[in-house]
Length: 561
Image (cartoon, rainbow, N blue to C red; front, side):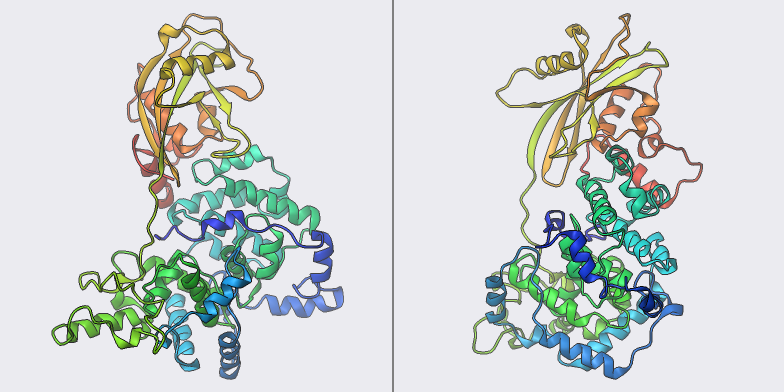
């Protein structure tokens, strides 16, 4: 749950449609989303242009009365928490019946207001200057603002901020509006997304843009509910982020950073991935979100988790809500009374009276670890190790082809892992299958015709870890020396120059494979220019984000997304 873990993976499988068509639904929503008839447009735009969470600008803050805040807090506490994606009403009922100790809740409105005020004041002073925040702050067109937020939130799902910066900048330069993205080809989208990982995100983003343009009249849905229902790939977190930052809706959000903050602030030690804990965290987030500055508040909570309340080495002395943090209070209490309380006896504050052990506390099988301090929270969910697979891949090169040396790439299927991207001819290897070189030679001949098997050389291996697969590539090379050049390629294949390869829609794994090949070619530098791998243009002074990318691409055998 690092800085990169912005959204839950289930967002990419979010629900897609409503009982009525997108166009009909949108017509019924025009009077509730800021897209009003002409006579009401001026008033609505005046309201919607008030400070939103896009950048947390002090110049654009909206003042709210104490009475309004208290009323919102009371309504939040009384309202039932929304269920996460895919949960049935029965699960909501189970959560409501579960014993929850008041220890894990906020005592009253005053405590909630204090939390909001401390967090937002800190955010106004300490927030990072990020390109998507600047765009959201400066953009007055609601659809463009929502689109800019949407792109950033999708890119930031399970990806580091430093990595996203350059991708986001290039994306918005190429497709500054929904209409621009909707008219782009999938090949172009994959090409720009190459190296960012989790490639289905880019495809779903474009599908969403096309739906907004073709079915919704170019108007973005403006509530968390309609965003989640109408846009493919938009789940509860992304919908809440767009609605709060772009449209000012008081919708709470829960990502990995917020999970960590809330679990520590309210001493939630149970598994945060469980249904019960997840719904309680969403309920807390909705209760806390500031109705006057919902977007700023959500970004502040995420910023706190990314920069202060970090997974391993939190900076508690710099935390703006330290005085309200149950985990910090527990640490202080343990330090004062360690010698007075028998070990293994739970604190009575953490138990729900007369109902058994509280289901949000640390499991009774996991005692408090004094060396961990506040990092006892949250409990780390058990993760399955990625399954291991093996493949053989070959760089087939024509060094004397017209226009310069060319290598053969083939396109992957339109669904599944790395859908639609280009790769060197590759075959999956089974433990009991035929020898890798024989299987690979047969695959090469399917694309390029008869080839000399004697020139197929094994060059090494590349290990690349995707989110759920650890894939080992056996890398081969075959150079067609002194043979008739092949310029045409069958459908689904391309002969590309080395320069074209670096700008093609290929995965990080294939770039690693190509570096292995380059290292074995006469007259080439073993290190190769890493900037050519990470971006099609060279930069004299690469940005910090680009440096992170360059360093990321350098190892041949490493774990990556």
